[in-house]
Length: 64
Image (cartoon, rainbow, N blue to C red; front, side, top):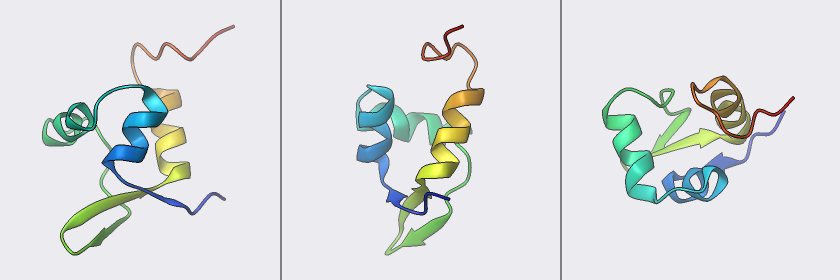
């Protein structure tokens, strides 16, 4: 299991968007709930994000 904690910035870099886009995804309920919150900042386990990315509609990284 990959238990590294990812911030908005880490997730954004992984899916090649701006951090504000990831914040918007969360605001609209498109991101899974954070695995941890520290000082009011949400963090997700890398595994959580990898699973989310592989199940996202319109995921461009899914190739046959």
